[in-house]
View 1 (tube, rainbow, N blue to C red):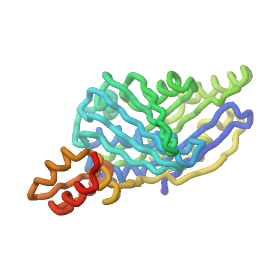
View 2 (view 1 turned 45 degrees about the vertical axis):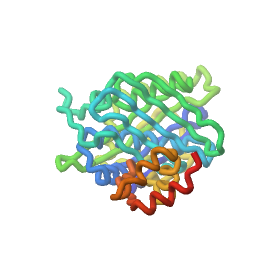
View 3 (view 1 turned 30 degrees about the vertical axis):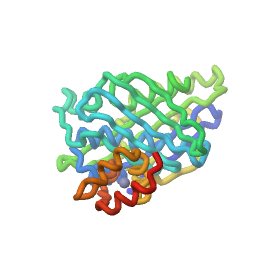
Length: 299
Ligand SMILES: [Zn+2]
């Protein structure tokens, strides 16, 4: 089944709900990074969150970067989400491994680590200074940390659920998530709906199981809101894994490291190789190429 994001609003306009199925894009990420289940789960959850957060943005040009910097063996984890659910990401150590938790789940919390920060950077794409929000890591399980970010940094009550099931052959079996967000101006009457949803959250299947059972993004929303309140679907998007690297961008990045560093690269007889973190593509520059870039360097 193709990946999908559905966006719904309750008829009283108190809540907005985003649901996503992301199995295909997480499969692509796993294949690209050759990641073991720990990194696949951590990155898959964050890619799923990023895809949903990207469609929350009002401005078409806004991109969001989610950075987990914890003390776990995965190292830094980065996801960049461009508008309309286009995402890319990596972890510093995709081969990191940890024993399963006592409940049989992949130990993402210790993979990312608890000592550290979650940074969420919102770039409006208009040349203004990006907006950076930072919170301390709560559990490293991704969903709890993003929930905490919304509560502290944006003062928006939010419920986040993210899940990735990994098969025995290390390929992702299912992935998905949902974000429920309270809209400004909700009235005390809406409290009933919120506590009804809170009760529902305690009884529903994990979102990765729903997706494994064939639920679509709309089905996940139905599962959350059916019998609770009236709602309607506002729109849908197709999330995808998309790297934006190009030789031109890599050239620009090399020029930006400065004359001194570029000069030392230019002295290497073997030239220089640049590996894109997001898609593992290798860009090769021979000695003459680097010398050419050095001419464009002005600092
Ligand atoms: Zn790339």
